[in-house]
Image 1 (cartoon, rainbow, N blue to C red):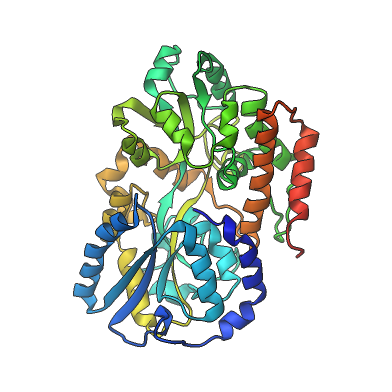
Image 2: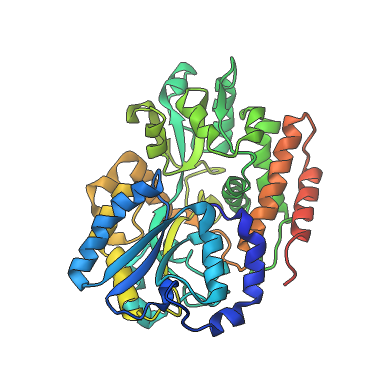
Length: 438
């Protein structure tokens, strides 16, 4: 999910949230201004390999909804590179779609604009109630203590993917369950031009995904209970250093990964250059690169000791997509019915199979498709050992500032410069200084 270009815009929109909530209607060019009870405008996020692929998946489902309700849905699939800026522009102008998909890490930031419909108990009741959804997915729909700004639609989680042949060649019989085991296995693999672990060191967002979990495992977070940044806490520093040290000290990540930002680590994995990757719902990507399902295995992301779980045993962020209603839609009943349809048990099975996601609707998880090895690991992770990224208004700025700081630390390693606890803390101090004042 791309959100880097819009981080500064979010701060502006948040400051102007009173203006956004004051906006009414608009012209016919905005989906939210559509006053026909028989038409809805829907901005879907690009989930598949292309916009056209998404249209092919979604169009028959929207036809089902039209047949059931008589409401025609005008679909626009928006690329991730444009989606957040499009939403923010709609928030300030008051002219947006009736229904839209949002990255779940944006929930609190967009909630702060006031542009999205709150999902209180009454509104949730219209789609069957909040209890239908996995608690971890609901936790990624807005700030704690406030009515959610969206409803879970597609869930994703991180797993450890490993190359079976490379493990066999190194004499490794099973995937690592702890980080110590991963490093030990990694040192057996990392030789003769092959490497143990892939990373997207130049991708700030991926850096956040990994270090958020490692900080949790060190008993820390990047924000306190009041939403103030705590980037330099001992646990946050330790989590970042542990991740960078996979390249710097343990030498199980290739230095060239410091420049990776466009899924090159997945390509290396598919080409038998790297034995492991930490990724979310990766099977379709492997297939696109020519791997057979039998070529790779999947296991939970390692923890410090024991087994994944709550607290310090968190091993994944809650990744995924939420569905929201633009607050000034003139077809609230139709928009609510559409969210109910998209999150119905049967529709969740159809859509999450098509996109290889995990349904956040618990009843849909009984489908045998979600008992495959990959889905089982991801499902169990989301239900028992995943946590949402910080649900604070400045979440996107956190991803930009801390993710970029880690990018710089990887660059230091690749250039032969030493990375120490002090240099990590200095980089995180600078990142925290870039955050807006609360």
